Length: 221
Image (cartoon, rainbow, N blue to C red; front, side, top):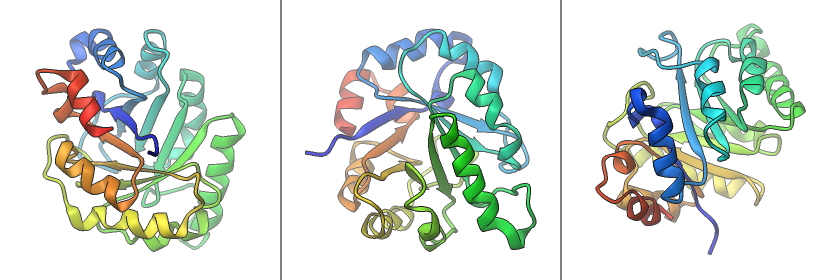
């Protein structure tokens, strides 16, 4: 059976007790720690930045799965590299440093830059974005992230129509591509995503709201 990487989102953790809550999921069997970075422009919410990632790096050995929901991600790559990120995922829809006509060049350049530091590079797509936009990059990236809610806030309802994009990506991608799904994930929706071909699941409220964190993580695997 293929390994499923479970990445608990600290968006649902207690930020006053972040070290404690990271240790809780680490000890419960999490594979990665998912860090949602929001700038208040690309999405209507503001969360955390590189200084917090740097602090998190000191308290866990798990890979830090950093999801940049920000405009102009190319400006901040080195900040998150220095902070200790292991995976950096940016949005296809984000404004990049080049004009719209040069989007493909800008995205490919950003992927190469992330990987040049020895990190895994990922591209994420929002619910209204077609998975076809990822085709030119599937051989260049390490991970594709499919959003099954509108990015910006935790606790939203899962959109299965978005999860169906996973099957399309899996069909057209190299075998070693990690396909991650984020948004409304629980034991039921997680199985739906895995059936479509996902092998990484992000869950926040489902894991942190569970009475038994180990069982919640195990149910996603």
